[in-house]
Amino acid sequence: MNQNMTALAKGNAIRIEMADIKKGIRSGELDPVEVVQMCELPLPVIDFLKCLPRVGPTKALKAMRSMDLHERHTLGGTRKDGRNPITDEQRIKLAEFAGWQITPTARHGWRDSVAA
Image (cartoon, rainbow, N blue to C red):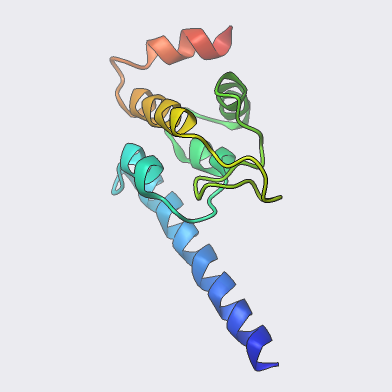
């Protein structure tokens, strides 16, 4: 029983930390580009993208498809099913997308490529 409680506590701590990251991105306290580069938590990419300004579910899915990411990919490296870790190239594309979403003058480049 003690091992079970330890696992539950560890899972809760990770979920709280991921929620704090998402709140920080929404509020502007955290730089999304740094989160992409440094995050080792199993934060789903779709949730990360939806935290960005002007990104909803549809734009997030289109962006993920353009980067060859599956809905189950996480920033922590592997998908929830444990297969296909996120590549460095995909991480760079995510960082670029995040940077364009928070920089109003540069965001048009991604809008054109994702909308296609």
